[in-house]
Length: 244
Ligand SMILES: C[S@@+](CC[C@H](N)C(=O)[O-])C[C@H]1O[C@@H](n2cnc3c(N)ncnc32)[C@H](O)[C@@H]1O
View 1 (cartoon, rainbow, N blue to C red):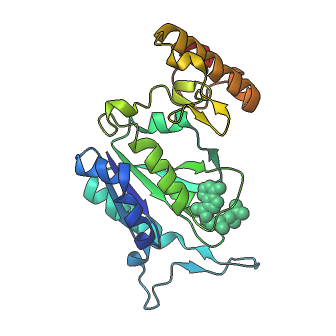
View 2 (view 1 turned 90 degrees about the horizontal axis):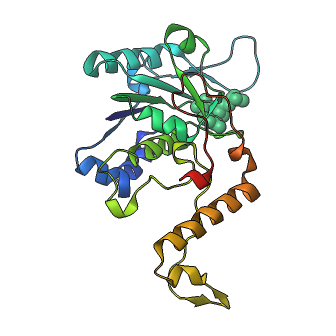
């Protein structure tokens, strides 16, 4: 799978893309993570990627021409990408979206800056508009890294068996994960639940299922309500954690 991130700050992303799981995925040949600086596609001597907004107002707007030229150049070289535009007015990103993106061979993530993009970027090409949540960041770089990591760790073979993603929070429409414990057995007066030392796998599984459901009810009751499928989303409505 190829992830191509379009950004004005490739040097900020590259160390992270080479670290931990993302670095391992590349070393194993399971993902290719690249950056491209759309400033390289400007044609004026100042290499300007932005300009003042028509109609007035504060801030600068990203021009459409260097970005579209950069995307077209990349598509000529590699083939068509599933193109993601990072924007606060996009669809909020969810685990289900990461699961669907795994079906794509090539994903391009466009990071905005300043006041955002000239609207015609959306008119001349088809984009999957994604938001990281109801808050405003200075740029799309952190959302691009978050989406890349959420997808790459789901690629079969990236994580070792001992780190399976199958039972994690939100996976396949499920609720939250169960609580985890390790040594010491008692920490500052708080003991690990006895059942976890019982050796009875069925009892442990039942305890974990109940604890996950309780946690989901308490913290994210919205996850337990059946939701209408998102546009283009295959598969069943979310299931209860007890159905793990
Ligand atoms: C300062 S923001 C632009 C905010 C825009 N004027 C607005 O009010 O919605 C600059 C860029 O950061 C990125 N960005 C900021 N917040 C984001 C979010 N919640 N999700 C995804 N991208 C975001 C987008 O690429 C955006 O074009």
